[in-house]
Image 1 (tube, rainbow, N blue to C red):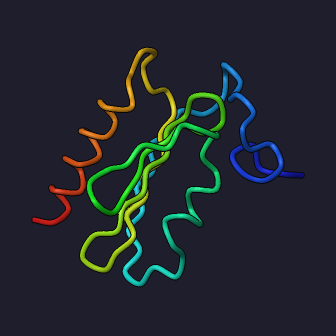
Image 2 (image 1 turned 180 degrees about the vertical axis):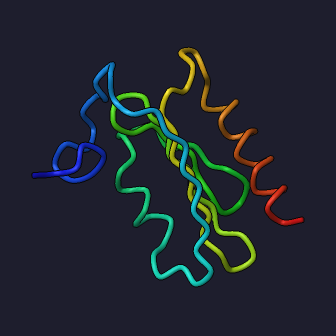
Length: 103
Protein backbone atom coordinates (compact mmCIF):
# COMPACT_ATOMS: atom_id res chain seq x y z
CA UNK A 1 0.00 0.00 0.00
CA UNK A 2 1.07 3.57 -0.58
CA UNK A 3 1.26 6.17 2.19
CA UNK A 4 -1.49 8.77 1.81
CA UNK A 5 1.08 11.62 1.88
CA UNK A 6 3.50 10.35 -0.79
CA UNK A 7 3.68 8.31 -3.94
CA UNK A 8 1.07 7.97 -6.67
CA UNK A 9 -1.62 9.74 -4.65
CA UNK A 10 0.38 13.01 -4.59
CA UNK A 11 -1.90 15.83 -5.70
CA UNK A 12 -5.05 14.18 -4.34
CA UNK A 13 -6.98 16.14 -1.71
CA UNK A 14 -6.54 15.05 1.91
CA UNK A 15 -9.76 13.55 3.29
CA UNK A 16 -11.64 15.78 5.74
CA UNK A 17 -10.82 13.36 8.55
CA UNK A 18 -7.17 13.07 7.51
CA UNK A 19 -4.25 13.88 9.77
CA UNK A 20 -3.38 17.45 10.73
CA UNK A 21 0.36 17.99 10.88
CA UNK A 22 3.28 20.39 10.86
CA UNK A 23 6.71 19.01 10.06
CA UNK A 24 10.02 20.88 9.95
CA UNK A 25 13.22 19.15 8.93
CA UNK A 26 16.77 20.52 8.80
CA UNK A 27 19.32 18.53 6.82
CA UNK A 28 22.93 19.47 7.55
CA UNK A 29 24.36 18.17 4.27
CA UNK A 30 21.60 18.33 1.67
CA UNK A 31 22.04 15.71 -1.00
CA UNK A 32 19.11 17.02 -3.02
CA UNK A 33 18.40 20.33 -4.72
CA UNK A 34 15.42 22.63 -4.29
CA UNK A 35 14.17 21.58 -7.72
CA UNK A 36 14.20 17.95 -6.63
CA UNK A 37 12.16 18.50 -3.48
CA UNK A 38 9.83 20.85 -5.39
CA UNK A 39 8.63 17.97 -7.55
CA UNK A 40 5.75 17.36 -5.14
CA UNK A 41 4.37 20.91 -5.67
CA UNK A 42 1.12 21.34 -7.55
CA UNK A 43 1.68 22.87 -10.98
CA UNK A 44 1.79 26.67 -10.85
CA UNK A 45 1.75 26.90 -7.04
CA UNK A 46 5.47 27.49 -6.39
CA UNK A 47 6.44 30.98 -5.12
CA UNK A 48 9.98 32.14 -4.36
CA UNK A 49 11.13 32.68 -0.77
CA UNK A 50 14.16 34.94 -0.58
CA UNK A 51 17.03 34.13 -2.90
CA UNK A 52 17.17 30.40 -2.17
CA UNK A 53 13.80 28.92 -1.35
CA UNK A 54 10.17 28.40 -2.26
CA UNK A 55 6.72 27.73 -0.84
CA UNK A 56 3.99 25.80 -2.67
CA UNK A 57 0.74 23.89 -2.32
CA UNK A 58 0.54 20.12 -2.58
CA UNK A 59 -2.05 17.41 -2.11
CA UNK A 60 -5.11 19.64 -2.41
CA UNK A 61 -4.29 22.44 0.02
CA UNK A 62 -1.37 21.34 2.17
CA UNK A 63 1.70 23.59 2.15
CA UNK A 64 5.31 22.65 1.47
CA UNK A 65 8.33 24.95 1.65
CA UNK A 66 12.08 24.54 1.32
CA UNK A 67 15.09 26.82 1.54
CA UNK A 68 18.84 26.44 1.65
CA UNK A 69 20.37 28.34 4.57
CA UNK A 70 23.98 28.21 5.79
CA UNK A 71 24.62 24.96 3.93
CA UNK A 72 21.47 23.31 5.28
CA UNK A 73 18.25 22.34 3.54
CA UNK A 74 15.25 23.38 5.64
CA UNK A 75 11.85 21.93 4.71
CA UNK A 76 8.43 22.54 6.16
CA UNK A 77 5.20 20.69 5.44
CA UNK A 78 1.84 21.66 6.94
CA UNK A 79 -1.79 20.73 6.64
CA UNK A 80 -4.84 22.58 7.90
CA UNK A 81 -3.67 25.92 6.51
CA UNK A 82 -6.60 28.33 6.90
CA UNK A 83 -8.69 28.91 3.78
CA UNK A 84 -7.80 32.19 2.13
CA UNK A 85 -4.15 32.07 3.20
CA UNK A 86 -2.21 33.61 0.33
CA UNK A 87 1.15 32.59 -1.08
CA UNK A 88 2.50 36.00 0.00
CA UNK A 89 1.50 35.31 3.63
CA UNK A 90 3.18 31.91 3.49
CA UNK A 91 6.35 33.42 2.02
CA UNK A 92 6.54 35.98 4.87
CA UNK A 93 5.94 33.29 7.50
CA UNK A 94 8.60 31.01 6.06
CA UNK A 95 11.10 33.88 5.77
CA UNK A 96 10.53 34.55 9.49
CA UNK A 97 11.09 30.87 10.32
CA UNK A 98 14.38 30.76 8.41
CA UNK A 99 15.54 33.99 10.09
CA UNK A 100 14.78 32.47 13.51
CA UNK A 101 16.76 29.33 12.61
CA UNK A 102 19.76 31.48 11.75
CA UNK A 103 20.04 32.94 15.26
